[in-house]
Structure formats: C-alpha cells, structure tokens
Amino acid sequence: MCGIVGYIGYREACPVVVNGLKRLEYRGYDSAGISLLNTDAGIYKCKGKVSDLEKVIEGNPVSGNMGMGHTRWATHGEPNDMNAHPHSSFKGHFIAVHNGIIENYGKLKKRLKEEGYDFKSETDTEVLVNLIEYIYLKWEVEAETAVRLALTKVEGAYGLVVMCTDENDKMIAARKSSPLVIGIGEREYFIASDATPLVEYTKNVVFLNDDDVAIVSRDEFTLKTIENDRLDPEIHELDLEVGDIDKNGYDHFMLKEIFEQSRSIHDTFRGRITPEMDGIRLGGLYHALPSLVKAKRIIIISCGTSWHAGLVGEYLLEDMARIPVEVEYASEFRYRNPVLYKDDIVIAISQSGETADTLAAIKLAKESGATVLGICNVVGSSISRETHGGVYTHAGPEIGVASTKAFTAQVTVLAMMSLLLGRERNVIEDTEYVSLIKELREIPGKIETILSLNDEFKRFAGLYKDALNFLYLGRGYCFPVALEGALKLKEISYIHAEGYPAAEMKHGPIALIDENMPVVVLSPKNGSYDKIVSNIQEIKARKGIVIAVVNEGDNVIKEMADHVLEIPKTRELFSALLTVVPLQLLSYHIAVMRDCNVDQPRNLAKAVTVE
Ligand code: G6P
Image (cartoon, rainbow, N blue to C red; front, side, top):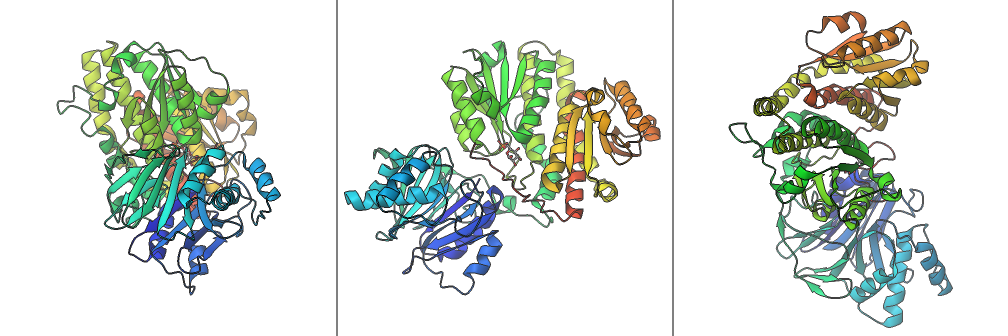
C-alpha cells in the first residue's frame, strides 16, 4: 500500500528512484511523484502510474544525488496531482513521502491552521510535514529532532521519509506499522518500502522496527529510537536476485508466478523433508513444537487469498493432526472481542507479512498470552518478526497483485505442519505418513502437467470472456479453492463471481442458474465425488453451463459437463494444490482477453498496510 524509494549517494538519484518506484508499483499505482534535493528542490508528481510520472519529468532538470519518490494507493484524498506525494511544507523547509494513515490528522490540521498554515492537498501527509516544519521553526531544532518530536504527536501508522532543504546532506526515515528497509551500499544508501528496489545495488539491508528513526547521509547511517536513544542496526543479507523480480520473458508477473509454482512448491519443501522421505523438519517451529503438539485449539488469522489458504489449513490440520481449528478474517478477529486462552496457538498467514489487520490481530493474540506463529513469504517482514516462530514459504517474490504461487506455497507449509503434528501426536500411522510425504513430493510434477495444458485453458477463456457472472462450486478441500477461483476472476477481470460449497447451491445460488451462467465445478475423484456429480446434474437440469475440473480419464463427468479441464489425480488432502491451478490460468486469460491490467488491477494493492 504505497511504495517509497529514497536514495542518497554518488549516482544520479532520478533513475534510481524511478526504477525503484516501478519495482514497488504493485503496492499502489494511482499516482506517483519524485523530488530531488537539488538547488530548486523541485517536486514532480501526477495522477497515474510511474510511466506517467516519467512523461512529466522528461525534459525537466531533475538532477541530483539525493532524492525520494512515491507511488500511491489513496487513503486520504482522491488520486489527483495535488494529493500525490511528495508533499512540501508550507514554508518550504521540508519535503516528505509517507505510507500509512495519520489518524489524528484532523485535530493537528486545525491547530496548524490556527498557526497560519495553509494546505494545498487533502492528505494527512501534508499535515505531518507541516507539523514537522512548525516544530522545526518554533523550537529552532535540527531537522532530525523536529521529525522525532512531530512523530510523538501523531497517532496512526507511518513509513516516512523526509528531506530538509536546509540540511541537504541527509534524509530522515521513520517507521511505525508501515515497513521501511535501508539498503547499505559503498558511500550510498537506499530507502524503500521493501527490498525489491535495492537488490540490484546491494544485498545488505536493515529492516526498521516500529518507532525506529534512521538518519541517512552519504557516509553514515544512524539508527535511533523516537526518544533519541542510539540503536545498533542489525544488518541482514538479502537472499534475492534481480532475476526473481523480473518478468523473465512472460507477458505478466501473474503468468510468470503461475508457471513458477512447480518450482516454488519445491522451494517450500526444500531441506524440510528428509532425503528418505520419512520425516519433516520445520526449524522455525522448533521452540513452539511442544505447545503445538499439546494444543487444544489453533486459530488461523489472515486476509484475502491467505485466508483461503487458512481454510485449507483448517481441513488439513483437523484431518491429519486432529486439532480443532478456527479460521478468522484478521479484520473481524481484532475487533470482535474474541475469546483467547494462553494455550491457544494462533497462526497468522500472510504473503507480504505486512497486512495491517493481520499484524493488529497478532498483537491482540500476543497480549492474551497465546503462542503466535507466522506463515510468511517475505523474509524479514513485520509479521515474521512480530511472531514467536513460524515457517517461511520461500515462494520467491510475488509481484502480481493477484496472489497465485503464494497460495500454493502456504498450503504446502500447512500440509507439512499437519503431517508433522499428526506424526508427533501419533495420529498418523507410519506407512500413511511416508506415503503422504511421497505424494506431496509428486505435486510439483503434477503441476507441470497442468501447466502444459495452458493453451486449452486459454481456449475456454475465449468462450466465456464476456460472461457477466460466474459461479464456482466445490466440496471439502475444493470449497476454499472455489472461493479462491472466484476471487481471482473478480480481482483481475472485474467479472462478478461467487464461490460456494457445492451443497449450499440449493440454498440460494441455484436461483441464479440459467443458460448464461458458467459454473465452474471442482470435481476431482474424492470422497464427495458422487455428491458433486448430483450437483452437476442439478445445474444441467436448469440449463447452466458446467465447466468441470476433473481427474484425467473421468468419462462420467465428461458426458454431463459442457467442458472438462483435466488434472492429474492426487490424494484428497492435497487436491487444493492442483485444482487451483486451472482456475488461476482461466482467470488470467479471461482478464487478458478483456484488456484488463492483470498485474495491477484497479483499486487493489498487493500489500494492504492500512486497515
Ligand atoms: C491484498 C492482496 C491479496 C492478498 C491479501 C492478503 O488484498 O491483493 O492478494 O491475498 O492482500 O495479503 P497477505 O500479504 O497478508 O497475504
């Protein structure tokens, strides 16, 4: 949710910042801006994407070795040129970019207006930069002190970078609930919302913690608390290559990420399954394992696609480890006064590790004394640092806003956790345990087979690209996949779609079915196969169009359905990992054919760092 890039060093800052913004555009893309602290401290900004900003700065004297930029996802004030960041202060001493929400901005704005301050935009950021300037001038303090003092007066969240026109040899960055990373080069420093813009310049980074303030000059980087206490920065080495964040010849990141899934699942279980395939090791759960094994209840909290992975996790953990599981939307959980016990295990699932509601729910769970674990993709993210332990999905950077490979990696982790707990709790027999691990190892190969049918999925997409509605149905492990399939279609093609447990169709959605309604029915051969066959008949009896995802060689459903998408067979427990892939490809092709911006769908952002 909003991307920030800052640079100070010996290079021309403009291309570093603009390229960095392009890398971060998945976080928000309704307006963009840049400011370099050269002689005129110019600010260039506009509504639209970073490519629109490039047109604005073309031919302008945007030169200098220090600057910052922003790509926005609007919270306060509609996306327009004026509300775009950076924002300068009333008397021109400060320029700021900000990610997050200043909750008490109304009160602060009123006070500043009384002091004669005027505002050009409707943003909370302009209030913050004016507050900094007000303190700076009134108390005659250094820029850094003004920033720290101003931050003690604000309520809310910020990832903030500030430049002071009177001190043009440093940048000040601060964080509260909104991520910032400092990249450390040779006589140069980088600041960004996540590590992707830094990786082509340096592998050494410092992740800021809440209430950290970083003062960054060309030669030096100082870390302090908001109360002015010096901190020792912890330097991490990035395990990220430039190739990981490029499209590598694919038309879209989403397609690349769908096609990466056989590799990414491999990476998820790399080093975690013994070579003999008779054991699972999840190092990040080492300390929590005794509590997990004894757990009377697990609560999974997450949002969006990660919530769908959580639903699959509920089925897996209950099936294999026989521990009761509840799955909650983080946003509901944090506000609904949930009952939590000290011996509860809370698992937060998040691709980005930065989702504001999930982070807040984690804090709530920790306050109640529960053990909180994370399943995150982004290494060093806030959620991974806020939890007592956890498992990284290691799916590699996911840039497409619609989540694909993160989902299958999350489900893979949940499957491994369930197997591990099932074994530790003596619920799974040894032979069954080994056979399930072997089957899990087969999943990447089976995904390859599904991906090889891409052209066929594209052909079906062509048939239904103009549909106004879609229904997705599944039972058991395929129910969360139905939800995920519908979400993928809505997100990127703007076609209305609903996912339902197939049996619930009779309690409402069946009324929608007519000859114009495509119904995607997830029907692999499993325990509820016969029931699904009946559901297909019910749809056909009402002239609905059935697109069935079936196992290879299923001639029964082939006879009844309008179309079948064939996938290899796997154990029911792992069926979500395969059935989701054709749905991802179907949505992708429909969206491309409808000329939608697949990687940056309207109104969405990859990491939702505001509630
Ligand atoms: C946003 C993204 C979704 C994602 C959700 C949760 O809505 O567009 O793709 O599933 O946030 O994000 P997380 O990073 O916590 O998994």
